[in-house]
Length: 111
Ligand SMILES: [Mg+2]
Image (cartoon, rainbow, N blue to C red; front, side):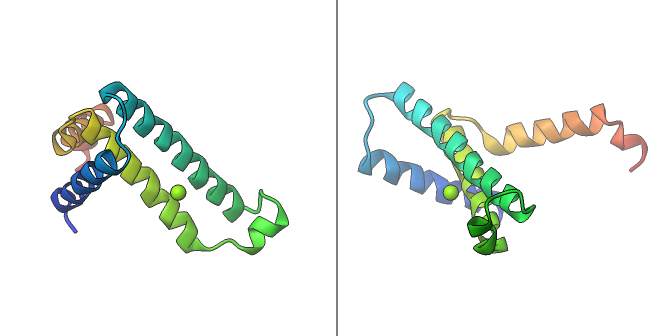
């Protein structure tokens, strides 16, 4: 799946969420999307700690790589949902950041 398709799918999900759980205004939606990132990042952190045997034994016993990957996808998806709510052109800003990072790291001199 290409990034355009992923964004398109998340635009559909965003419309569904806003219809199913309508919030008062744009500020509330942005706040909710931001808090969702924090929640999902916590869940990803939990999985990473578990993968490093830094959680209680009952969690370690139930660890699976799939859960860690699912939580990564949740973080990624929640970031996309915030970008959609903020009307950010995801492809444009990511490409701009890659260009900036390559220049900052002076990668163009090596590649
Ligand atoms: Mg999650």
